[in-house]
Image 1 (cartoon, rainbow, N blue to C red):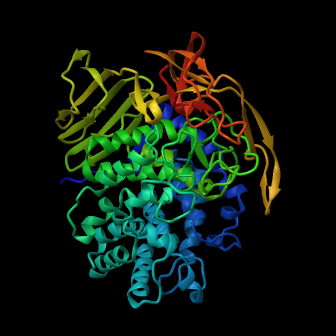
Image 2 (tube, rainbow, N blue to C red):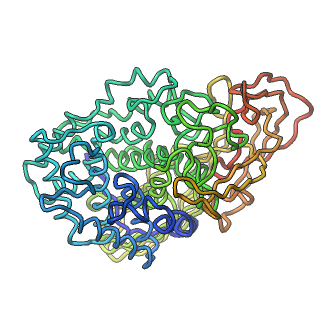
Length: 603
């Protein structure tokens, strides 16, 4: 099986709406977290007295590619400051995490697995010659400590053992030393066996466990793909089986699995943690690269175009810890929390609602997605996700001009430097495929052969039909291609500025309640759906100017509220009997509707 390789930020750049999305991210919390958040600004990783575990590595994992994709000199310099401090803090024996030698046994080495991934990420962006040796020394030391029994995997490191294979695969391609394979085997032997815990995923319970933790599971999907080569095991497609079990018992309309913070079943009023969104995206990026199977790229699109923008404010200064499919208001719950293991503020938009891991980790979503637009294998270039991009590599220079997924027209401009084949993935939902204005048989992939020196333009277009998708409890969701649509709910934004445990929340990174208004208790009158494409504005996933909408006939129903809550719709409608006449309702993309109804009945 030919493995696909990802391009680096030197070769692949975002354009169009995707570049604008990254610019908004850089102008928001991602580009300023090191200036305003103590756990990054004053971290022990750079000699400070704040958290010295996952938060700086998490932030760098997204901040580094964001800086290099945008060629932002200031951000690149700030990333280097952190990398310089981390490398300078590496001990003589190779240990790289900020803890004393006598505390290593109690230090959860999930942070080491994570910083290894970050350093590889930085090397691919910067080419910094110090990095390979630093990663070598850190993981050689890790092997010696684990092999001798001085330390062992526990807690997060045990459940995220496969994350270390990003660095191990990097090392294996350069050093070809036996200890790398031995360390790989130790990690697997001491790590959690997800294939044996699926029974726990079938029925959620109100108890926090590592086995059902949603971020662990989002990361886990790629474990076999990243580890099997180094372990010299045959790839058996475990991700397919595990994904299907999770989706059947905990799936959401946008391809997530509920987890607030652990698996939460099929209810549309349970949430999914933002960390899980970006980690599930990363798993799909690597699964597509490893297998070449189109379903992983299509699933990646669903998350990127729906779940990712939905959980972050338009200006990207605030975010939710958990998002819900049917979310009629984001106010602090009175009394007990609705969520299984999260607090009563987890769905608010803020600096660090519920817990700060998403504050640190959400930044990787858009940059890594942008780096998945094109991939390559030998003399082939693969257009994996057709988003606006510019590729400048050894084989060719390719520009892709498109507003996909908001408009299904892709214009490729190609200048071939060598003979190569361009492979274009065609989504499974595409109909009436056209190539340069001529009808083409519907296919899963298009191939175009180029000769050295050849210059050509190709325009590819297709139709996509909106449809009602079945959901549990006889509810329906509207989907059109990779976009899911919801009834948007108007709201009043209530701002809260305060300080807690030395962390200030002040505009624009304060906390907000989104107090929803009426108009959410509806069902579909019929199956007729009409698409209206309006074009992408300055904010791609705008709440007020969505790039595409769907018109549907809907009627009010007596839906009812969840028992004990004033601002949470019932899990399922109390009545499906229409109240009044049908009215045309404009549905917005799920990612544009911060408050929304997504799963509704056909009356």
